[in-house]
Image 1 (cartoon, rainbow, N blue to C red):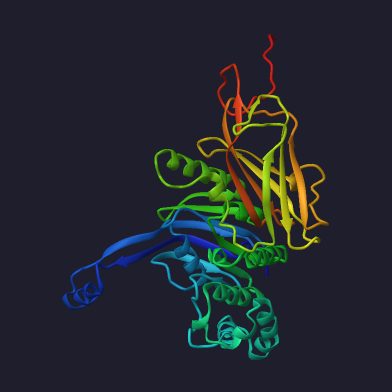
Image 2 (cartoon, helix red, strand yellow):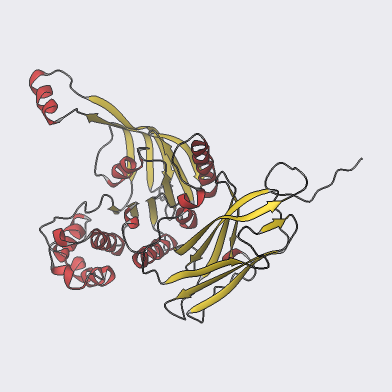
Length: 402
C-alpha cells in the first residue's frame, strides 16, 4: 500500500460560531425558537495539505482564524462544513492549561493526557520519568495543577506533547509564556522533532523564529487564506502588509518588534554595550561608500556557550533594509570560549543612500534561532549626501550604448 501524500489535509474547511449578546439569550432562543444570535465565520472554505516531516507556520493578525484552525486539526472542535483529515497520533498545546484537570497533580495529568493520546498503561509508565525530567518541575509534579504558574503549566504541556512521540505536533503561541531558557529548550526540541520526521503546525507572531524551522507558511486574514507557500515568501508578503497598515495609522509596531518576542530577564547572554567606532558626537554622520564599524560587548553565563550575533537595519518607516548575521557571513562560526566578548560588525563600504536608519543588535543561540537579548538603537545611521537619489541603497551599474 502506498503511503498517503499528506499527513494533514483540509478541504473546504469552514467554521461558524454563534455569538450571543448574553447568557440569557441562549435560554430565550431555546424557549421561543427565535434566533437570538449572530453567526461569526471564523474560517471560510480553507484548503491546504501538509506533508510528513514538514513544519507549517500559521500567521496572521489577532482574530484571523489561526487558533480555530489548530483546534479543528487537533479535533477539539468540528467543522461546520468541509473536512479535515489528520493521519497518526496528534498532540496539541493550545490555550494555557487546556486538557489539564486543575485538581489533579502534574503526575496524574501526565497519565491522563498520555492515555487520551492512545498510549497503553505500560508505555505510560515507561515514558513518565522522561516527561517529568524534561519538564523540570521538581517536587511540583506531585502538586495540583491549580497551584502552577502559567510557565509551569506550559512546561508540563510541552513535555507531555513532545515526549509521547506524536506524528503531528500542534503548538499555538504557548511558548511565549515560558522563560527564555525554556523557550530555547522547546525550540530546539521542535527542530529535532521535524528533523526526525515529525509534522509541526506552529502558530506564532515571532516571524524570525518560524522562518528558522517552518518550511511553509499559511497566512490567514478574516478566516480566509491569503497566501500559502515557502515561509520566506509568505512572511515577506505579510510584513509588507503590516507595514502598509502601520503607514495608515494601525499600531503594528516596528518590523524588528514584530520579528521577536520579548526577551526574558535572566537570559544566559546579554548585551552590555553597543557603540559606533571612528565617529564622535551625539549624532554621528556617515556618507555613501564609507566604512562603518560598530562594537558590541556582551556577556554570557558560561564560557562554553556558543553565540551568534546579528543586526537589522531599518528605514524610518520600519522597512527592514538589511539583516547582518554571523551565521551567514565569513566562516559562520559562533563566538565562544569566554564569559565576556567584544565583537565588531564591519561594513566595508556603506551602500545606504541619504536618510536616517535604525539598527537592532541581537544575541542568538548556536542555531541562530532563539534570541537571548536585543538592543534597539534609533537613528543609529545618519547618512548624508550632496545628491538626491531614490531608494535605500546604491547598486553599482552602468548604462552604455549598444
